Image (cartoon, rainbow, N blue to C red; front, side, top):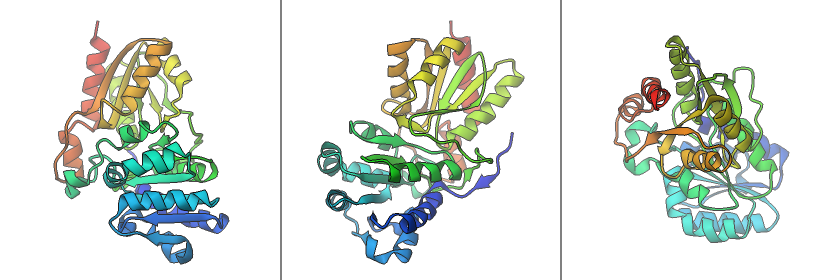
Length: 313
């Protein structure tokens, strides 16, 4: 199975902002001195009166976003995932989450797939931090079409959002367009033996792994769980009942992200055998593909974990 490489999800984010800027005169965008990397500079060029580069001051950016939103506006605030979530967390907690501000936080360069930028720029724990903020909707799209839909959904929905987007070009999973709905997963492959629940760049890798597993007589269902919260509990329960095994695959620390949400859901509705395939340490600098391979974020490693789960008594 091969996938055509499309634009990075950060590029889809920047392009969609410009489209929304023409449609929504109350849309404002803030950035913390990384607008050429987060791609918000496109919005800044098109709508300079509604764009603010606050400098290397993530916490201040979050506070400003909450204030602008309080005046009845829709606000997107962007930086690298690790910077905006780690450095801005106190303000995210009080100024945005506690007040339910209509602020959309977009963390670019999430995960370890940023490669050469190194560990100081990698967001290993960003989704977990976002999930600890009760009112936040948390989304991780896998490709350009789904990223565009996610950004639009955030703009059109009242309340706080966190969306992670990535640096590398993303394989196109949804060639015919994406039927994206917040809180509803997308089944990309059916299977009776186990279910792989994943998101982000790991969707394409999981589909490749599922194809290889099929050749070994193991049929794996694959769910794109793009919305980590609100989670698609019905899909998790159905997977547990119909396949009996769930493998969660995520480019994130395993203790606080998608896996934790799926495990909680299954425990409450239909307990089953679950395995967690993700990051268990901070990664290091290197070529993106080499980093992903070293830390198990490619199809062969996913396949290996799936076989171990399938064989578990």
